[in-house]
Length: 108
Image (cartoon, rainbow, N blue to C red; front, side, top):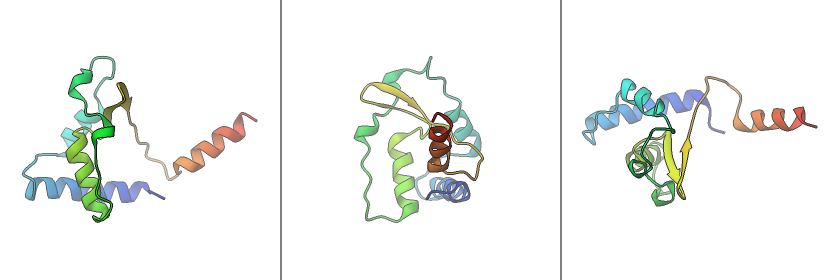
């Protein structure tokens, strides 16, 4: 399962690769700005449709993450079939499965 420390490591590696290899400036402030996009005011036309993003499964995990971010432009806000999607990440050790299990157990 995808752990938060793996995400942080991959994000730092992506930022480093972006500066060196792809000549893209994706620093921490840029990532914060991307995460702060307001879905009520963002232009839908400015967002990439996630269905158009193609990931080569034969590449390494880091390369796949880098390709995804390069294609989607904003990993926190994109569209899917015309619907704006906003992603958030929490600083928790719990996995998505843990959260969902807890939710479903709470509504029984």
